[in-house]
Image (tube, rainbow, N blue to C red):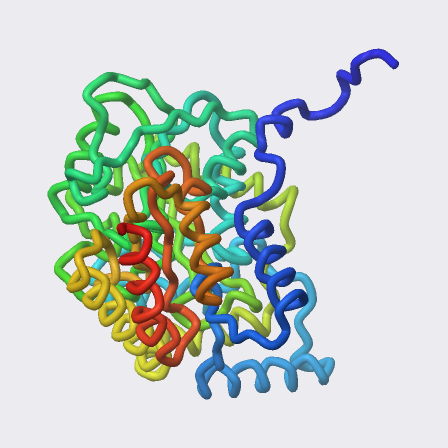
Length: 398
């Protein structure tokens, strides 16, 4: 059979399977093979809920509206209902301290799909500071873009910094607080990236999925940094901050100033031909989550995650381990004992201690000797697992 030239060969650049799908399969196999053992899952960054009471009431209200022809909603606007975009705008001003325009907001079914659609608007090189969220590479490669890795340095505390050379990218992807390292980027570092983008004629895609976890002085939005409106796109999400991983709601902000409005118009066209908008009842629920009361109710879960991540990191570092994150983020980035890869140490933790973690190598260059620990599961699972992690860590160092 001759070579098939009608398929999108860019998809061949994707990894054989997705990192978190592999992890789910390994955890499932562990439970099936060892049903008598307790498993502490600090692996996939999923939430355990429940959603806030005000969100539940908004969902119920939306469902009731759909039961009557007078209030029924069918297809909605691709860029989101006006009430949802106003809610995002007011949230940015009230809680983040950044001004954005309602017309620059595009509502999405989560940040991952929004990021993929943004990649569809560009061609050329995409700069990815690694280790990073693996979906960046997968989405970029699948869209025919050329991912170019820039390695984050442990010496710099895993804060992404612009490269010394001119890589001439069309797009730069930044995430703060970062996934997987849990490190938040200070104002000065973000300003350096904005200067770099201006110098190279590129644009920044800023993933703010974890901004609600910030307790330091780190900017929660790229639009808190001078010059951002001329070169930056931002995505936001309620997945982790309001337990919407199963409900799917996020947004994209594309200022009119970017390329004279051309990027905004192009993205709008991408939405129009590929997307029918987030469900009405989910947008109603999202408005409740972004209200002052919603922020208060959802904040209880966030505070619990931060408390457990901080306790986990503190115990690990007191035992002599090198760990990052855990302060503005639910993630702790743990360096493995000498001689262990992330995959090897993850297997040790799983089979000897019943603790599932994510091997750092799945996040790209610079993650090979690390594992990511997630405190998103709620309760005190993360901090209570510290004793067993430390015991294995010390045993491995002997």
